[in-house]
Image (cartoon, one colour):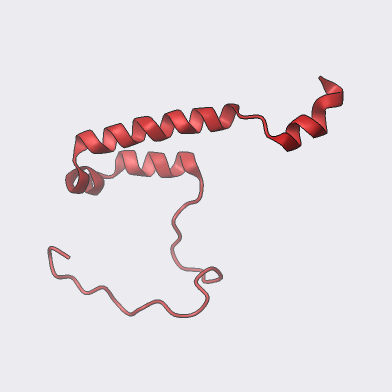
Length: 79
């Protein structure tokens, strides 16, 4: 936007089925990409990016320790 670059043609069709570039849906991969992004650091500020990453990494650790209802039911007999 700042440099006035063209955005290209609009996306059409079923974008869930297209083979174009995708944003990852893997949490750790997304966090690593954000941490490596100089654009995000310039656009949002290094302090905000660092704080956001700290919060999201803490959430990821809590999520990874979570035991779902399915796991409790499925594996209760083995505990």
